[in-house]
Amino acid sequence: MPPSATTTTATKKKRAKPRPRQPLPSHIACIDIPNDVPADQRVCDRCDTRMTTLGRRCVETWEVIPGKVVRHRRWDETVACPRCDRIVCAKAPPSVLDGGKLGPVLVTEALCNKVLNGMPIERQARDFQRQGVPIAASTLGRSVAAVLALLVPVARRILVRIKDSERVQLDATGLRVLDRKAALGVFRDTLWALIGDRRWVYFEALESGDADAIEALLQGADSRQLPVRRHRDAQLRREEMEAPPTGLPRPWTQAAGPSSAGRGPARDGGLAALRATLRHREAGHP
Image (cartoon, rainbow, N blue to C red; front, side, top):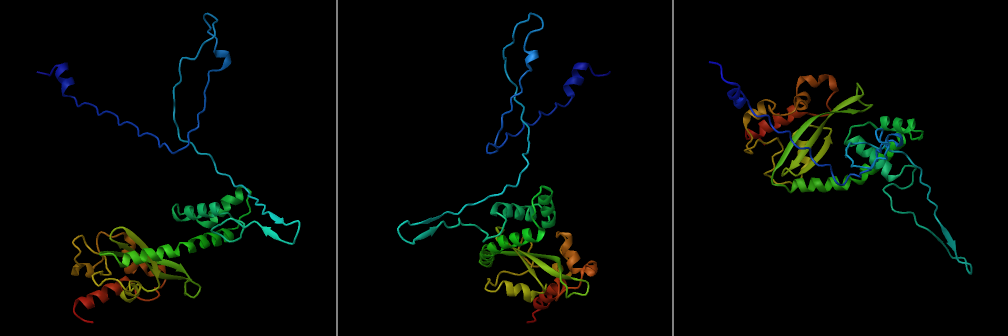
């Protein structure tokens, strides 16, 4: 006997309630745009009476205001004493760049686009040129490099924090470096990533990928800090030395395996040499 309509309706799964939209961030600037009824429609077409506002419906959308490049002209004042030869000039305000035509905000924005968004400096320079701003890629690149140089002391302090950490995790991948001295114009270096106590992160590009290079970087570190990738139980197992770890990203295999042969010659050693050195030490040899 077929079930009744009431039973069928009761057995149907209830539709999940739609999830409410998250509120828009309050720190984002809000611009109110009135959308009024046109004047020719504000008179009732039935009784020829002028209509009054009943209410408004709010519709929120995301929009972007395209940035524009402006030219700042700073006029440094010079004052002189009318009674003697005393002259005083206004000092230039502090800036991250000494001289040059590019302002600190512009250079910082270019640095963030390069590091965070992966936008090449050449492409950013072309974007400025399309806006009519004559900024060469070499000029923008040198300015970004100058700002990066200011962050080197911060990076060194992070390395000190990593050396003082109780646990250090390491990972490495092959890195292609342009070099005219190489036969193919490209060397394959090793980019190391160091994580201290899952808080401090430091990157270092080394010409050598063997154990001596990373040990030289970690001079002064505690002896418990083992320069290899650790498991959750912090135990270094033999099978990790015999084969590349299974949970690692693809560049680990490419840096140590034969698939990296076409990426340029290695300067000295590699990840395979690092694993061989650690196996040698695990066997009890000095």
